[in-house]
Length: 312
Image 1 (cartoon, rainbow, N blue to C red):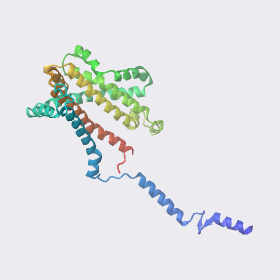
Image 2: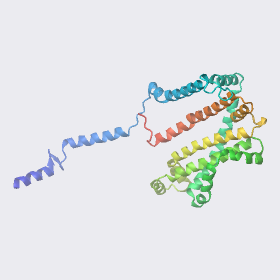
Image 3: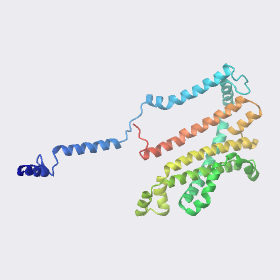
Image 4: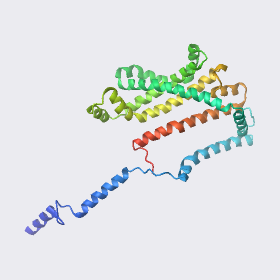
């Protein structure tokens, strides 16, 4: 019995000559665990091979576009839709686009609409951001304006075109007014949603460090609400672009120039389906290009900065 107690006391007090019962292998195990955790937290920054980028990002949309064109051509070739005034062949649409390029008009159509859309979106950004912060941080303002913003966001943008024409006339100011009324609610609501998702711990930590008022908003609230804010910006641009197209289609006037919406309306008036499809494809192309060049990189940067998008 005494020998057993002696062994227990020796085993509890020392193991392999190391006080506290920790053997020489325990330090190595701890170091290995720490190294494993460090490896999990390490973000690989190596360059992605072009073949992987091609297979994962370039090939799928290319195949999808080719499939759509093949189905489109099949509907025309097999005379499933045999009326060219309803569905022109892809080659006919390409001829119209190519002709507009040779005449130097194609870039003019695109620039007229893109310049209006981006400028109107910048105005909406300047108005929607402080409005969203005000609604998110002041309870009385949220109770008063919050439901109105949600209602305006659900209102079709085309509904604002007739009153904007009556108030401002057929000019660019009318276009920008329609864009603002369509985009500001989306931007503001996106920021409100982002602020609502900020952890209270961040706010308490900011107040402890002296970040209150505008300083706390700039250094704590806005960075933490950035994912929701970026989502609101993307939706705001979508509303801006759709509002502009509605305004250009309905409020056509020679002094306003020919944008993509006006081009679509001209094709309808002339019963030229090739021109109509030209305008539709250009509108779609601009929307995709703006998303790929501006909003997708911004969204990836926000996610990567928070460790939510790790590149392997």
